[in-house]
Amino acid sequence: MEIRRDIFQAIADPTRRAIIVLIAIHAMTPNALAEHFNTSRQAVSKHIKILTECELVKQEVSGREIYYTLEIDKMKEIDKWIEQFRKIWETRFNQLDIVLSTIKKQKK
Amino acid sequence: MNNLLFDFTVDKPTKMVYITREFDAELSLVWDAFTKAEILDQWIAPKPMVSKTKYQDFKVGGKRFYAMITPEGLERWAIQEYTSITPKTNFKMYNAFADKDENPDLPGSDWDHTFSEQNGITKVSIVIYNESLERLERILDGFTQGMKMSLTNLENLLATLSKK
Image (tube, rainbow over all chains, first blue to last red; front, side, top):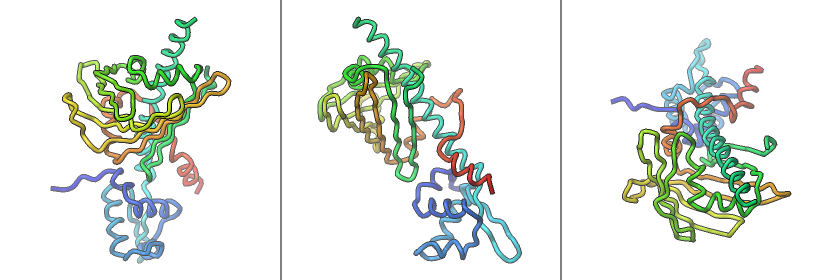
């Protein structure tokens, strides 16, 4: 069975987050990317594989070189998800405002 | 009323959520609203959900056992254990989902609340640490409908990228 990966697996690992930040700045070849890490090239390419499976990174071939680029739209999924949390808290606090003002009136 | 601060930040790498909000009420009242189940139940569940506390013992080592109930009557139980209390200043707790028999479903999350008052406005800062992002996702279950979405956290990064 194929393991279904999602974006949260992608960002769960510090090396993968570092890769995301690097290729967010500009597309990079596997070699250029590996130079930024102390780990082996194999380790880096394993992370790249996961990021690709999460559809966060895609490969672009230019001449003889492969470049990794970031899927910006996929990154937006995280923001949407976070925004939902923010909304929950906003709703909660608006409810609390009403509760507080009710209690204040009762005290008077 | 509308000038009250509301700040919400998620730091994904450290799995921390930072929430700050001001309230137009004195500190002792806001403290009660966060620490007394009878007031908590009035606001903590985002409508249309309701919160029901089975019992609460607000002391270090004490617990609040409560459920969030959906309009369909589905109960989602959770336990909060108070790990530190400095009256009207700070309290910390460990929150975990549970079944209706109080068996916790670990891991949970650590919550740290800090209260301060200035000119009759009370500021509450909440820091939540989740051991897993998957858990955060679970919290969202049932809340997702009709929620307006916009970009916040990566806005700056995306703006930078689109300039290229």
